[in-house]
Amino acid sequence: MAPLSNFEKVWSGGPTIGEKIKDIFKKKGPLRHKLVISHYKIKTMISRLEVFIDRLKDRDRTLFERVVDALTMKDQTRAAMYANEIAEIRKLVKQLTFTQVALEQVALRVETALIFGDVMNNLIPVLGVVKELGKSLRGIMPELSIELREVEESLREVVIEAGEAIPGFGGEMYVTTEAKKILEEAQVVAEQRMKEKFPELPSISQITSAEEAASSGGT
Image (tube, rainbow, N blue to C red; front, side):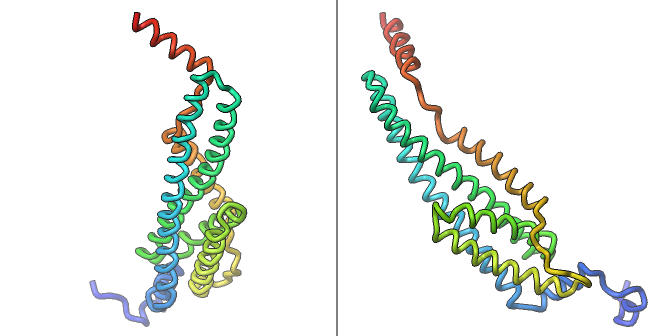
């Protein structure tokens, strides 16, 4: 079947809004370029977070061993000192892991927009996600927070330009319901990763029980 002529398209109602957006996205090279650059930046941030988390995990492992040694020596004061440091490290790791998981979802949406040109459905929700992540990292990793703000601005520009094809588009882009859903899911995944990667701290009673079991097994 031959494709519709321009006249036939107009007669039948013309292209859909989705087709208009995809057409704009394909024609505007700079628009696609912005999205490619944003995707690259997000993937780079995810990799940097992974490196930083791994360093913190190594520090956590070292301190964990010191807690065990201190409890074995019945030095509860020293054990508590190391345990407090571990608690601070894990609090930071949890926040960074949450950020990493959320950015993975953002990267996936941006990639989908690049492949299929469905800019509005994929990018509008993640704008709110990127904004929230940037705010949460201000006091932890200021440099990353600034980079996230730049990515947010770039994605917003893409959405605005694509939105020109939608009659009555008012530029309201922070759909909080879906953004919250993405953040909530990221929180659940982050907590699961924490459970898998970080063992629970032992107590002195657990150390004593283990020593007694080892002692009785050797007799």
